[in-house]
Image: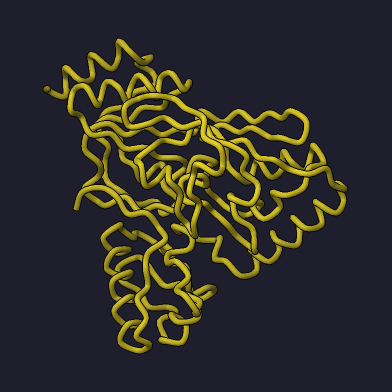
Length: 303
């Protein structure tokens, strides 16, 4: 199916203003790197996501789902087929002690919404720079808390284009894993079950975690967040630091001198620079400590 015909058909399903062609994805990633998307769509309803996925599946067109591009590296060759960015699906609401958030809402905004409602349990998420969809997909966590601790249920879209609601027990949450990722599903929304709390105490905890994050993480530069998963019995950042790799630079990407678990784009960095630096760090840590560092950051796209 020719790309021109695909575009014409998609414009009959989705408002044309929501569709871009040959769009640089570097505009939408936290690293400020990444090649072009053949077709980029910004759905504004769950039904538009569903229509696009069904269209892609029926016509053999590959599709890729993105949230806000935080814990992500898109290769310099870009992404073929259709890319859907879900950040326009960002509504947050509550019923009693439950908060429901659409997949494109920032998890930070959900934690702030919880504070306004005097609900406790999401304080740990006040510094996670991902979307709700991404947080569900990878069971995001920080400072001793994880999504699985507070999630009640999730609405997902299956690979066949069926919407279904799953309870937490259906999602097989593990460290930085969920059945959503394993089954190739799309998280459309999450409902979080929280507890009534004292607004001042909730805010104090969030302020404490924000100060901790700002003092330790290199937020002044573009980055993909924490690059590596925590290896059993170790801390990735400590292993990298003890390997003498802080400040190591390839192209425009550097192992942060502020936090060794981060790699920052100090200027003109490319996704290839990121990939090369990741491989160099993995090789060095393996040689020095015999530990295999597994990436936490998701790496997608064409070389």
